[in-house]
Image 1 (tube, protein in one colour):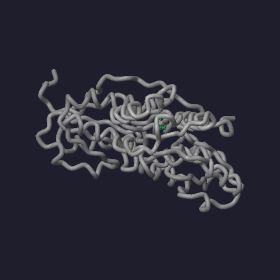
Image 2 (cartoon, rainbow, N blue to C red; image 1 turned 120 degrees about the horizontal axis):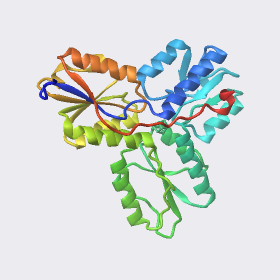
Image 3 (spheres, rainbow, N blue to C red; image 1 turned 135 degrees about the vertical axis):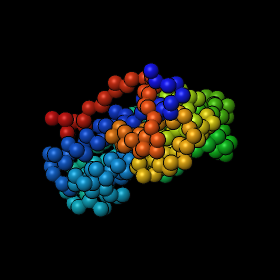
Length: 313
Ligand code: SF4
């Protein structure tokens, strides 16, 4: 029988790939299979260094801007989505586009367009400089006003008579966003909210899983790359719950002293981190000293998204 005091790694459920990331990677792979290399990808297809390097080895070429793609080239837009200006630019350059924008990001884009048509001044809750935020804010000519924290709400130069609405980035902290929304509804009691919250199911489920896991462990490892918004939120959440947390995207980044004397280690992975990477990180933790693995209970996701029409045939 297992000794209840023997060291363990508790695995969060769910963790790792979401349906939008899975679809985005499939789109690049499918384009490589059908058309051969090079397939250009605007921005990292998903924010994970391991995934990007694997696709690069197969012939994907990652670019920051479309002028780096030769005329007539094949380009994939990343899961984070793009502005209307980027779409127009691709068209004027004669590029063949395959769009890996997550359908849940597209849902937010459509909300923005509708709110704009209905005459609303639109706020976006999100992080400056994140590609999803740039894409969503670029859906309408008038642009959106960015709110990053509660204190930004006070500074908004609008009165209660203004028709106001808001949308959010899909990968935010559920709790922090709730605080910002509360501040917004106090300042603008008639502000219009999205019909269904914009924070996606995968972000919500991974944060709920960390809330369940954190009280049971002494340290949390988040598998995720620095640029990954949802992975950063998982690390912050574990820290807020009083547990030391580290985010890594390669086994070599782990340090033996993080685990010294710790009976229970929790492991989760952001929505862009593959399970194979999570497993190599588990193996590295076990190399510091024997630990059994326990899979925690949690939501079992069955969401899938189909390929875009121009790749689905
Ligand atoms: S984290 Fe959410 S919004 Fe982002 S790709 Fe995954 S399912 Fe889509």
